Amino acid sequence: MNNSNVAAARRRRFDELVGVFHQDMYRYAAWLSRDRTIAEDVVQESLLRAWKSLDSLREDAAAKHWLLTIVRRENARYFERRRLETVDIDNLTPSQEALLANQPNEELDEMRAAIYRLDDDYREPLVLQVLMGYSTNEIAEMMELKQGAVLTRLHRARHKLRDKMQEEVADRDRCNDP
Amino acid sequence: MKCEDYKEAIATDPSWEGGEAHLSGCAACQGYRDDMQALDRRIQQALSLRVPELDVPELPELDTENVVTLQARRRISTPAWFAVAATVVIAAFVGVRMVGNDVTYPSLADEIVAHLDHEPRALKVTDKPVSDRALTRVVPASIAEMNHEAGLITYARTCVINGKKIPHLVIQGEFGPVTILLMPDEKIDGPVQINGQSINGVILSVGSGSVAIIGEDKENLGNIQQRVVDSVSWST
Image (cartoon, rainbow over all chains, first blue to last red; front, top):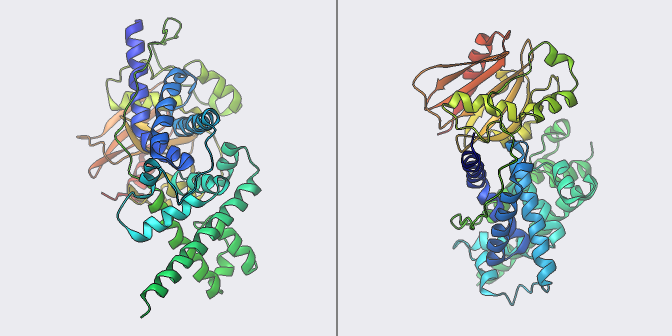
């Protein structure tokens, strides 16, 4: 097989994998960075890095994990470069606002805002479990944590979200009282 | 099990199916589990952001001079397959790992055989089933309903065939692992035989999709085919 065929096959493999996992990459980047514009930058950088190191991916079955790991590293690099300050949810940039104003649904917006406010340590394992479908073992490996730490964070994350949503409901009920 | 323990387990994973004995006699824990599962559904909805169209950056040309290409796919034959350690199996396949990446597949069957070579660790002799959670993750209700009648499922991963995510399962047959690929969107006109070195298989038309079943060459796939087809129903 000549070089142009090899290159074409390589590109085809890349396009297939990225086509399938692009949504997961973007959502993971968005919830890590909490900013749509940064997420788009991180995904672009991740795609470039994935393209360059595609031959290191031995099994396509491992592609999702491989791509998300690249996204995670690129996100960390981005924030190392920019050294961004802590986000104040009451003073968001338009790009950060865009993450929250995803769909016109009050209850979902409240949940999204509550997730947004979670510490990174709690938000990330939740995204990996609920959205990406990873087991606690896999999350521990990905985040380089012990499994016990992942369990604790997931437990606390859900309780924080549940409490926050109960507060929101109570607030709404108070507002609706005559 | 105490309520405290049950609640802790369910808060870390609301899809956890353990603690049945406790749950059946504890209304408080049942309520807690239902709340947590409802919470998780809302979390999932909230996390599922709208995704902009894929915008692939300009990719640099890479040096392909040193890429090794192989002309033919080979599969390890039984019974040697049973005897060798997993590491040896993997090592044997590392040599053919580029296979499939540099081949234009003439047919679905060819792509499937290449895929098996890509994923050797799926073909492990074991009696350890995958968890219900893993199975549900790989075969979500939105794709298909699958019950456990097919056999002992020991491997479940989402894979890509013909550009689409599909459930890749392995059940244990009489002569070794049997690969099952559920392809709800791959319509075929009729059964397609898959023959290769030390393997035999078939792609069967099932409803609007198809199912590939591949085992070792000595494996009698007849019974397995029937069980698999009976245990699967597409959701769409």
